[in-house]
Image 1 (cartoon, rainbow, N blue to C red):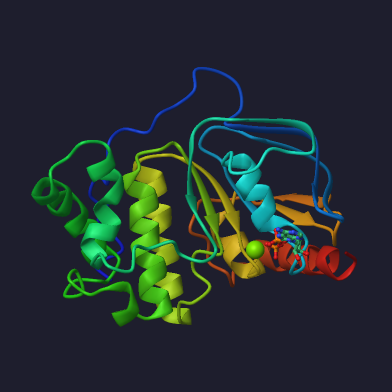
Image 2: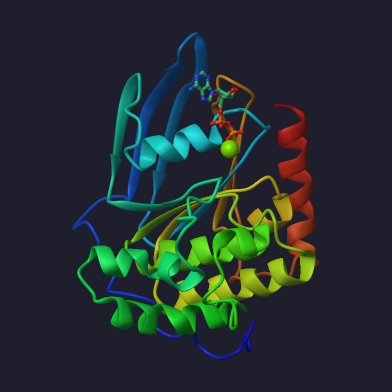
Length: 255
Ligand SMILES: Nc1ncnc2c1ncn2[C@@H]1O[C@H](COP(=O)(O)OP(=O)(O)O)[C@@H](O)[C@H]1O
Ligand SMILES: [Mg+2]
């Protein structure tokens, strides 16, 4: 991980923005998978440039919700309006035969860049994420946390204005995770994007998000929304986060 104080390099083409309205708008969204009622009426609007964290019990439908936002599934009922999104899936979908740099650079290749150019653009980003020296490693040669960081780089390099990140830092050790939080906050400050961040880590939500939405057990609904004041990345030990952490944990316990 490089210095956290310098502004990160521009990481891709300019974000695509829709012209008006929210970046994400879900209206009374219900979703069934077979016999299972997964989402039980989700209303959520996310403003351009806002980071919203989604926390909730395991199996409540967080990944399903991101798939609906990204258009991978259509809702059983209700409306999903979003701008084009880049999804970092919970199980990183890296190409097993391609090295870390080719995996990160994939969106640039899909946008027409030659291999050398794409690798040249992606390399500084991998270095910022602490992966210098691992450019030629295949996914199976990387740790889970390293693969997650390659997937983060790939999501950013799509240039999309909306990022849907599904537990992107779950495999990182505590120090690398804190460094990566700082780095992502720097990236978002330099080039604002809209972020939907699924995490099981309340502290991560409080450090990175402008708003935390707590989801109930299946069928999931948003039971609590907590706006988080202050500039990111926040100090998790800050006084103003203590009460918010307690409120988020109480909402989760009550789910
Ligand atoms: N293809 C499927 N068919 C039936 N049920 C599914 C399918 N995929 C996921 N589910 C169920 O939907 C629920 C929500 O899954 P998921 O969105 O992955 O939850 P989360 O990400 O919050 O852990 C889970 O209970 C899971 O078992
Ligand atoms: Mg999930």
